[in-house]
Length: 328
Ligand code: PHB
Ligand code: FE
Image (cartoon, rainbow, N blue to C red; front, top):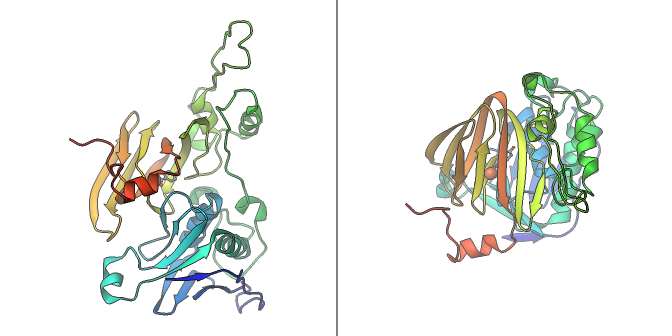
């Protein structure tokens, strides 16, 4: 394993398709009309540009998220919270066996800078990587304009609970959005709050379904409540989760509406382990030794519940905390 420190954004000018090429340590990235090409010393890999940009968008917006973000079965990142591994074939049994897998570690600001710059340069004006495929135009072709506003959207994060004093602005943002075409039947009434005198700033309630019905992004959890390390991160889902998540901790899913099918596979090798069909009201826990990817035919609402404790990866890796939430 090698560590790169310097920022290595290539500034040699646009390629024949109008896009900049990027170098990051011993990796390089090139975009053409249809594909992203990732090249490393022992191999190379091609990803359809729509898939690549959707995955890159999440990795950027979530600042490398919890644990592993697999862009697909070959390329991805591992978050070590301060530094990040960029890998090719690390979690692919065939690449490992052939010894052509590759991994390089970067200080977070270095890889963050390259990823953010590449996302902005490679996204044309008509493509929104956060939108469902039915709600954006295509990413194909030579470079044409940019969509900086869309790709730099900030993830909504409450400090306490949405609606409690100090977090009102999050709701007024949300209510500025129209109801999504798939959620027109969602009631918009708000709960009545009758606080005892003196407690007006301490008690709040809001209609989470109404809030989510106005989300204009997919597969992008927002944080609506924070209680110590417990984060409630609801999100609206349509089509396919653009990354395959290999978490470094247990996470919980509560299906709030409609249906999502999850493909669950071994985190190390990618061999399939389970298919989980979640209907409205279902609750599931994803253990810490798997990877998972969701499929949602109709836009649906999902509550992702994360334990944000920084101690968890080490506790699990050292065997002090279990990889499973329940032992049967
Ligand atoms: C997950 O990896 O658990 C995840 C990510 C984004 C979502 C939903 C689930 O929108
Ligand atoms: Fe996950």
